Length: 60
Image (cartoon, rainbow, N blue to C red; front, side, top):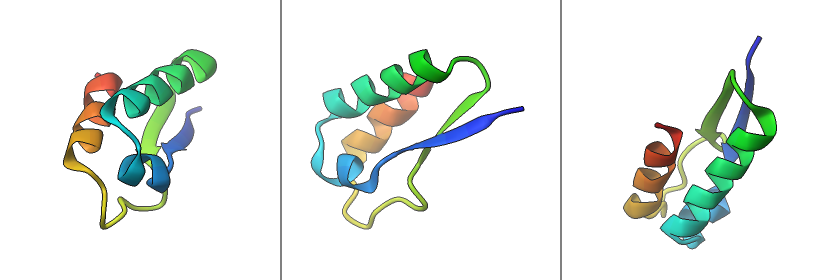
């Protein structure tokens, strides 16, 4: 079984890459193996590219 969670649209649009990275790491630690990190429903149109890169890098 897997659990899917998200990085909020507001974090991706308004946060910093460091905040995104820290939130991904917090969720990974809290939920463990099998947890899938996603953006909330979709990527916001004003998503900062550096925040998306930070989310992907932290997932690796």
